[in-house]
Length: 338
Image (cartoon, rainbow, N blue to C red):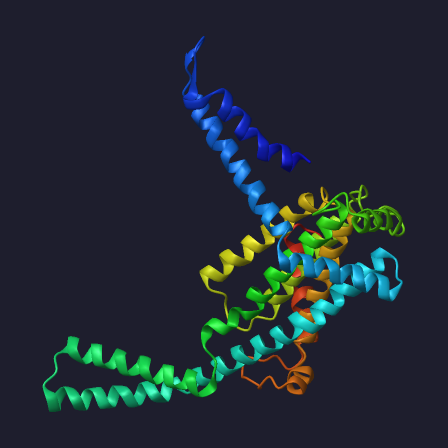
């Protein structure tokens, strides 16, 4: 309801203070800033409304309702089941494919030193034969090197842009699921619909444990904190399994994602429990997915090629590295073993 009110406010103000002039008080320049802020609110509300009424969200929302009706499970279990199914059927294959691309890129990068050596020899010969200058030789060398790299990429079908395929598939899916659950909680897009009212009533009774009503926020903060901890765990595990020293850019992104994971806790504390439950389940599935894809045996099973950077015993490596960091942290604060 607040969004609907926001969308109407600019119209009312614009009608009363058109041009920022009032006959009794004169020119008020701050009115233009007010109109801009309200216009921005209206734009955000309009964008959110368009997303809420979009066809993909409608299909996703109907699929959630159908799964609930077919399974006969309470809504909390239906949300968990639908999340696990989506992560297994959609994001897991994308994650496997992304790992294959990363492994292929690493393998072709191992071929580059020999190619570089050969190109340097050919460039040196060409400089004497064709009387190239240093600048001309460098241009031809870079052009040939780029061509050789592109040939390897085409041969292995592993364009670097494909390493982002999981991100581009997971984010839209996460948004659609989140908007769909929000729609059900707020009886959108049509609050007068009998089906929407039935779904809302079922959500109020379909909770569990300390959350009997899924349309209300989690006052205990268990789910929001759990989501933040799971996301931080994913980030730290990915950081622990790196075999190379992270670049400055990688460190910046790691810290940025850490901060985002913490900031999401208060956000999750303000949304309905049904939506927060989906976020927690999705994060938990992501953690399990990351751990599974670290296993060399599972990688061979799904066709991910072996590469030199692969850790033979990833779980033991994570445990040992984590223990070392904990011991180092305790030693810094004077709590380590003497």
